Length: 151
Image (cartoon, rainbow, N blue to C red):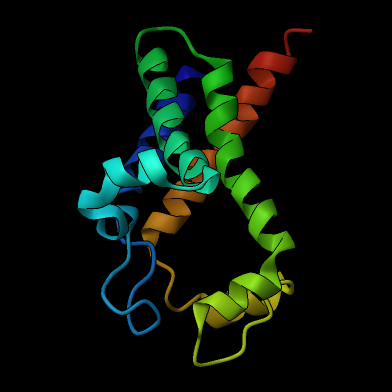
C-alpha cells in the first residue's frame, strides 16, 4: 500500500510542474506552476477558498508521500489529497453556467454534459491533468481504505 501511496503522491505533486493543457485552447502551455508563478504567496494570503483547497491538495499529497516514505502511511493526508479535486469538481460542476460565462471561450461547451466537454477538450489535455487526477484517485481510495477500513 505504501508504494502505491508514494507513487500516487509523486504523480500528484509532480503534476504541479507538468503541462495540463496546451495551445491553442490555453494560449501558452498551462500548468499550475505557470499559472501561479510568482503570485503563490499572494494567492495563499488573499485567494478564495478554492485556491486553498487546490494548493492544499498538493501539500497533502506531498505529506502523504513523505509519510509513506518514512514507513507509515497517513490515511488522513491521503484522504485530504484525494478529496481536493473532488471538492473543486463538485463546486465548479454545480456552477457550470457561471464558469462557462467567465471563460469567454470562442466555442460553446456545456460543462454540465461532461462527455461533450471532454470530447471537445481531449485534444488539448496533456499528461499533467491525468497525473493529477490519477494520483488523487489512488490517494482517495488509499485514504478511504486506511481510515474507514480499520473499523
